[in-house]
Length: 370
Image (cartoon, rainbow, N blue to C red; front, side, top):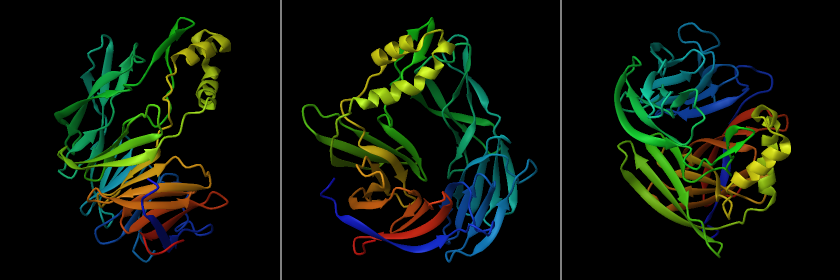
């Protein structure tokens, strides 16, 4: 991917404060931008959604801490469907819907539904998780319940709920932890850790899904990465291949996967040496590192791929445009994380030297350099 054109960026707007609680952020979870350009920022620690106009002026605050109507106990995600805002609150077990102006519209309970797993003594629970443009809510990965819940991999259904939290249909079946490798030690069964991200990377996009997979080169460092963008119906919007230079996995990676696991040796009825031996036999490392660290889906159909970069102070991103053509590559400071993009505009959250988050709007193109 070195042959892609370098992209520059210009900072256009910075929102935040270390003194004013209305403008200062604590833990930005998500950022979304409405069709009219208003910016919605979900702060998990202050438990509210702050809305700014395109000039960075605070328009309103939606929600706040609590368990009452329109309040959040543990907000984990949000989204915009037209002029409707939804916020998922896991502790209150509900999805709350607002108008773009902050009026409470209705609440969807996320108590979930129990489905059969096909494994004796084990059931699966699916809950409404991801609202879709058609008004239904898609479930996320099912939660396994039962005495044998450590059995992996397992198949689970993806279910549609209506806004009242009732099951409408099962749309497909998926498999969790396909790469899981089991081992036994001290009379207990465990599962070996894997090098992340595991292939393929499959993430939700505003209008569907993005799947990123890559070839494992043999006797060469020339690899191919495939980016597939699916629309809401599951049809392929585009598929693009990118070449990358594969980096071998150093031997130290095995140690980094084994060492954190040794603290559970006692609970598994084994010594650290016994657990270490079992883990080293079970862990199946790929020959080369995954070429990506993070994948982001743009609101405009673009895809952003954070590459494995040698520089810990910077993050190298490859940008695929909405037509599936590679747009270029841009290097951002490592303390910047992309939250929303619609080229040429990119909204990032940057941590300053005191780890205070700031919301920053960038303009990315091939003409300007930072």
